[in-house]
Length: 134
Image (tube, rainbow, N blue to C red; front, side, top):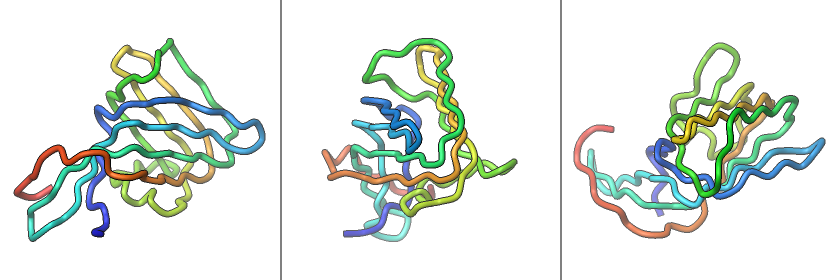
């Protein structure tokens, strides 16, 4: 099994948001697009579920309302003033300071935390093949 080269959170579907006071916040995705290399500049794009575990949570704000599942319009993970552009880096526990998710309905979720870890579940289905640079 190859290692994910790119994780596309835009248009991902949030299934649930769970808060564990004093411990963590978990975001359950029932759909993310994950790119796996099969050759040079050739990728299989798989639909996968995932859990994003946020630890050391000190603040959580949800502006607006969402129903689940709902799609993500934009997602930003930060370490201080620097945005983390590659979500594949979250496949191992990573030091972060802030997560912002914007949803298609206009709602926004902000979480201040100290660490994030993305756990991919089994591949659900092959969406397509992509040729070219990512």
